[in-house]
Image (cartoon, rainbow, N blue to C red; front, side):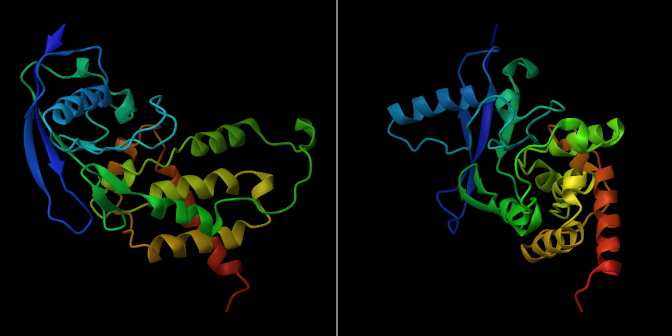
Length: 252
């Protein structure tokens, strides 16, 4: 089965250059194609016509790396829930649809070109404390550190965050609370994360604020846009970790 789509794509030659939407006709496309394959075919046509291809982020194509991302008709990663842009297929659209495609927009995300966005601010939040730095030695036998099954499952659910930035793009305030909450939670829940628990919460939240991210407005757009269904319970846990760290921190 084939469909024809009208594509209104944000084109911006550089970070400091003005941008605008440009309209393209897709031509007949198989509904088996992925969204990024559609952009690849469009770029082939543009290159043959001597035009500048559309720049967009991509890598694994399997929905696990968090590299891809764009807003499609107002929704990060498109209209299908729990799906990354690279796993979005054209069978979810109808013949004759118009797709408005634009980059993730947030104060902390700089548009580099077209749909390519600098999301390194998320990495800098991780660098501020989203790790375990103590020397753990070789891997211990699994049963020597008892972790209740519900706790282990909660930690693993938080660790599923791929850092794509959809939560930031969906939030009216451009907040990274869901991302930061997931990264704090996955370590706060486990014994290995306890030695640096206090410093981690303070340092990551300070980094988040300093990078220009907004605060949570409890609207839950982040949870709805997340391709891995990260729960806003992680935001509640982040707030509790911050309050705990504020009371027990040795800093003046």
